[in-house]
Length: 324
Image (cartoon, helix red, strand yellow):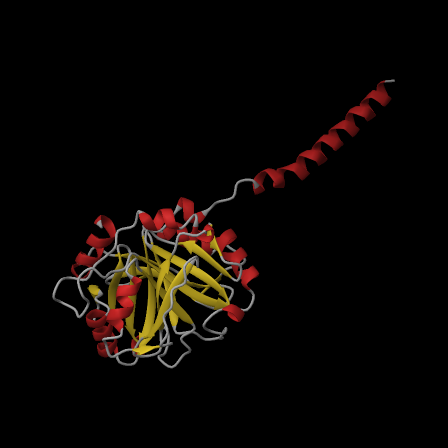
């Protein structure tokens, strides 16, 4: 009797131990870190690369009315909206060359779309199409300007529409940034309130999983072949199926998207420990004006995380990011 009871207790112990061992990993998997919620971003930026930086700067400053938030000589950080930027980089000193395909576009979100169209047609610029015909009931309207070296700038208005039900309330609370009076060609009353950086992919489902599961982005607008996410207070990011966009996928692309954060150490620790992330940077690089690191997304696009140092070159930029 004693031997039978002892055997039963041993079997119960083995069974209980086996159950405990199989349940532990399941409990661990419930603790999933969402880096976007936990570490976040405070602004967003996209970097374009030019053979003639001076000419590009003149275009964005005088014709589009963008102010220079920081000037590093080889790079000009231009403020587009309250907390989103386009950085113009001298390609001879940047991570990409000027002759790489411009497989990107940036949407300049405005409530004054008709007025921008009228103004742009008075300027010496290249339009992707001469037609502009807003249609009532469409989720969005726009037209495309091509900058001096081939980047697509999509002047866009998101309309009240079921597709935009999560986006419109955010945009309605976002302040429009207007050019400084008498410093540009832009008439008073025209400005931008946000940007959307578009990247183009072959396998959008795989890329969507990467940005949602690894980076922690929440899907804001689902257009089917296009997915839009918020990546900053006035910055958005869009994944585009190449079969439904303005560009086809290319292996090389002259663009970098940058996420400005206060938690660069935590971002680096998280991403460098992900099997699905290929790191370009072996560590966080510290320069005079900023700290930064680079990773790649599944389509080979460069993703940059940055912190701007409290130095004289960044006084205006930090004031915009921290107080605007």
